[in-house]
Length: 415
Image: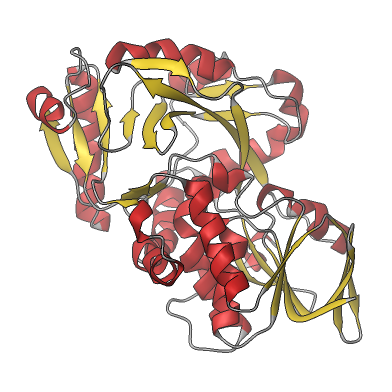
């Protein structure tokens, strides 16, 4: 029997960060996941800590654009029609939340978390000896047509004025100066200077978990099969035996529903699946920072093992077999602007982003169960927001003053 003050379920960036913050505040913590730390969704992102990411990715409301997405005509999205009966209620709620008013509300809620995302990462990176993974070069968005560039700049100027998001407009010559190995045919772009990126997201999460273990925390590789409330707190029945804890933090990302649904919660947790594959750079070509090809819908990110090509969103059932058609579509488009060589990965990697309809995470206490806490639903910003979410959760769990009002992230907003 394993016992601790807190059992944190989920060893991605969100769970590992919560475990570290609870440990720093004097709690004994056991961290449980069926796989090693950082081996699921936290592994496969573009490695960007998105200090600019205040405004969410909205559901399209333009009828013509929506029709093109629905017909799978654009590479940044792929819809499984067979999954529509299951996906439709969540997609409808996502659409309803993507009005201008809804987007503004989400941005106001996201801003206190996003503004602290880098400083909270660095507070964990430094004692873990991981600052060497960081690139302070921002990231670049490129546009192939002048019309798309002009529209994007206009939108970004408005977001900059409203939310304080910094950017630098780039003409084609400046794009080439910052990234000499990008090919011709780019109209221009913008540099997002405030974000930082890392060369190995999975290694960063493992490094945080190593720091947690070095400080006396226990990492348990086990599948949590049942979560039950007891007189003393909670018991988690796992494939490696029972774990007893006074409190439980549920941070299983896209698998959180497997445990909150048996407890009677019906949160509208959806999934955006995504893929990546890593390639060698041909010749002596290099990228100095992640590059988003905004009109096509993929990111090229320099990693320790090569150039990681990441896709947009696939709308499918969580556990359906991989269908990496988006990678097949964007890889030749990426080669139009950068000399990608042969693939380093034998197979594409598939991840699952856990998304609430309003694109804000659920952070805080369970409405109907004492000692149960939630920390999931971080959509595209899980890697960005893991440490700052962990701090907020730990402050709430230990009764400390919170650095921001946690109300926008409360589970009660879903009834």
